[in-house]
Length: 479
Image 1 (cartoon, rainbow, N blue to C red):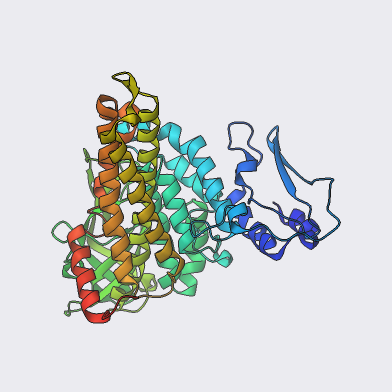
Image 2 (cartoon, rainbow, N blue to C red):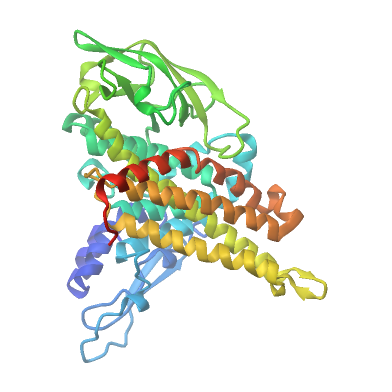
């Protein structure tokens, strides 16, 4: 999928597939040419690749490199393009680009994320080299414009990545979300040209790993009640306060990550909030306590960050002074949709595990899935997962990352899917009995991880409040 390959075959391809292949190289590079330990290249190619003259394309993996060739038999008459049913396209993968992305991320997850999940969760450590590898695949900057080193994709693409990664290791996915959505996408949407040129290439390729600071030791849901302040002093801002529960607050347990977008009060009004880019090593900025012994998400490192007369250049103000509440609301929307996608990944994996177990386990002379009590747990879990999946992808397809005002359904998908994912994980443990209760069979880890998604990024209670507020203000009749 190198540019010269695309240029050579472009005259033969349908326009939609040319677009898919031009968008795919960043996401696919790093997977081609790494030998048998890597996922099959065939699984990463867009399905239904059709040449204008009717020939089909085959992709064959061989000794660490891809061979792509047109099949010899070519029909004489033009062939109608395959239907969405034939190509695998749907609301969940609406274009060939999205389908290629899903297949690539799923293959990578199975080959590289799954084998390390239990080890790093038990050690309560982040797999930093693996996180950086997502930069090689174009995933760390999945929503960043290509001119800044990103992949230039949309909210649906972000949802696909989060669903696939979370199906194996939600904690690893959470570290990915904190970097790619809370810092990278946030800066891409709200930063000025100089800030984007300076930072986006490095955070998109994985050479720098970052996060975002909003919550505080005494401030969670009431985010505009934050106590951290920033005061202008000449060509600098002086920040004082502390931020708590910061994902990627430390990457090694000893030092901070590379940079953070930090919200701080810059005026007396409740909404006088500004956003600052604070870099590792700035005077007055330090790592506080590392949060250990969490219920779940143990491979995602969480910490307190402390700002004591932290001096930040005026050029590091992101957006306008006192106007960051809008930046916050805009980025919370994609954050909540991505968190809902994580719940989808957890639910999907749990349905797969309980279905497999119930199909194989024999009790009282019958397969476990012959018993009505078990059938109910599996069937309801599958139906709820599919309902949540449809809701999330329907919201994602209309979510403009540049806009604000999509809060009702951003809250809604996270509220529904957070509860759904935890319930499905709970049922998986119940179906699998003692095996479900131990770490070797994964669902107990997924169950522990799922609980955070009812708290982080907005509690269920906050979603209730926000949704009823928006419904009372904006909705008279539902469509």
